[in-house]
Length: 147
Image (cartoon, rainbow, N blue to C red; front, side):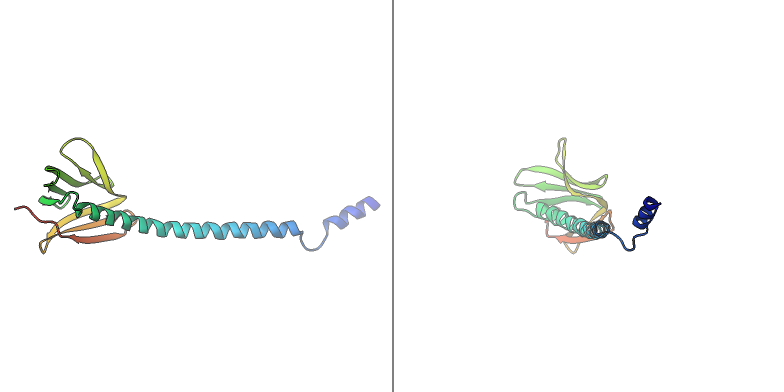
């Protein structure tokens, strides 16, 4: 009988233990940390897309190649570099913009795109890019057009 009373007392103890409180605080901290990580990751993806777009602009406007536009289509550019005396193509391929030479191989210039278009506008080359996350970037490049 005494044994039964002792076990019933232990089971009906009011409140909760210190370890239970620590576990609930740990779970709360983990949940908040997960939410903050997801929000910062979403912000970094947008920032990464913008950085890739400006890296592409730096490449086509660089003095290293001194590109001139030979032909432009809405989904492809044909460029000429007097420095290397070669022709290059910049085109949309799958989910990226790639730079190719006359021979095999390519270099991805912008990745994770949904659509890209090039236009001659006011004597400049306009590049419009829509990324897979819906972000849009547009820029004018002062590349000479070869007539």
